[in-house]
Length: 113
Length: 109
Image (cartoon, rainbow over all chains, first blue to last red; front, side, top):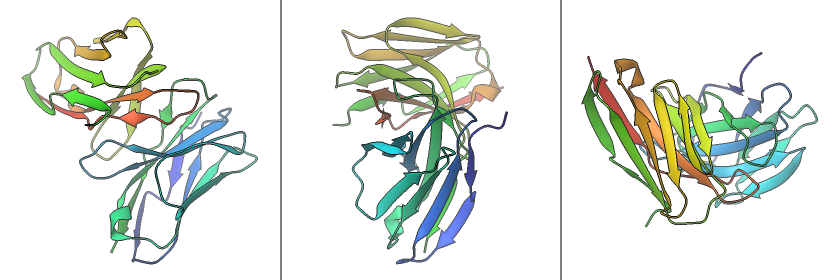
């Protein structure tokens, strides 16, 4: 089985632009969560989705939004990009929401110029 | 003060040495995760525990809920163990994980 896949792997945008990042969970996993990791720091929680519903949201501005599709894949959207949005964006999937093991994708490296 | 503190931030060891990485947290938790991140970004979940001790190969993780402390031990360390080790805690039924900043481990041959 394929692991968690994220696309694209790398992305360069300019300030003010919008970006969409994609995540496909492991087959059978219904929960997807998103994290932002700035260089040299630990990841920070952005969103969790389960069964297409938002189940948790971290301390991020409304410029960040996400959704989950019927096939459990997910998109993370960031509007009005700022230089500070440059980071590695990680997606993780799990079978449920109650502290099951997480499986991470390799991430999307976003650079905002 | 961060809710999750790891020590040390950096650790250099010789191949074969016993390694210990510590994690302290200040909030009530339902589970604690130990993660491994190699250069390039990919994260692998090593352990998830809410009490006691778990062992997988050369890796051992322990947690003391009363003291709000966990340790990750690596026995007979090897250069391929070189990575960033991250402690993360979850406090409820969703994945609002709170992460430590990570410990960069370098094992020299």
